[in-house]
Image (cartoon, rainbow, N blue to C red; front, side, top):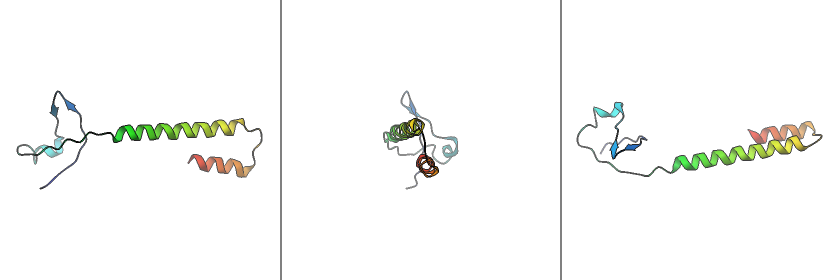
Length: 79
């Protein structure tokens, strides 16, 4: 069995096969549906990272005096 994986959206029960696969996968195919929840996890993870970065920036801005070492450590923590 040969298989390819691609992401797509269903529209009124129809799933579009990408152009690069249509010639080889145009008639006798097997479809396995897997609900894609990974995008939501990526989005939530990205949001959490951005919130943490903003909180670190607030911490930096609230300090009156920082040593070069503290500035370096804060900068590296954001990368």
